Image (tube, rainbow over all chains, first blue to last red; front, side, top):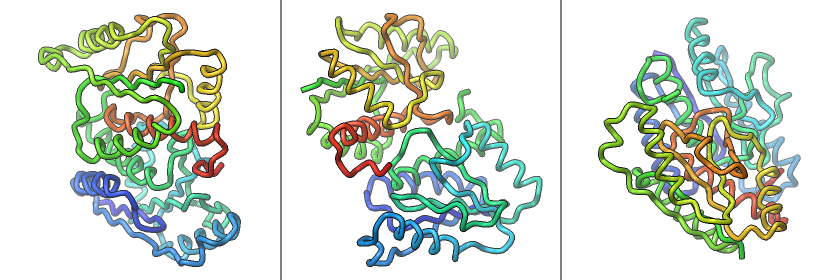
Length: 158
Length: 158
């Protein structure tokens, strides 16, 4: 069974989003071994200027990278896929026997791409900017949808 | 104050999504007069084949159109904007003294574009397919974001 890790910075603040995440985590457990990890933000990050904060948060994510895993950074500048496209990514990782996939979501200012290994992929969920908290829910729903597509299940209508 | 109506088919099923909608509706009240309307789905729609169901749902939405309002259909085949682009739409409607904007979200199979007046706009939130229930939350967040952009408020980071 594929292992998928979701890694992001800070607690999901809104209760309704935590509830939604819980629902999709449970649904995803049918298809993969799912882990979500929250990096505890350092209090001093909040007072940092935008660029330094982005650097500090990038470093914190980067330090959690595991050897051999496929990292997918969520980023507005990333590749724009449709839901079928994302399902193809997952299928290919599976065919390549990638032991683990980690989706990383940065803070409000995003992540520095350059700090990550070359094989890291970048994924954009939309040309629109979503809140970095809501992105978590949208991401889980998309990964769930990708699995239902791969399994030919009726959840995905087109 | 601009009037914005959100119109969709059927109740929002998941409690966490209803909670999120409530939060963004309250936030949006600072910028516009907000109304959300749910069209009660007819029981027989559920057993209809895809195309006939889409037609029935389209008709139900279309019948709610009000004279003079600007209708924006949410549709995967619609125009892909970034968040700034959506804020420009709202700004232009305001400049054109449009009395009301109505965002319409169809059911799981979408909406028939052809049934709507020519000036109707079509908006796509992403190349990805989102659940028609989650689209409601994402849409409200984007409209809220658009207003914070127009008001130069710090919610939108880029």
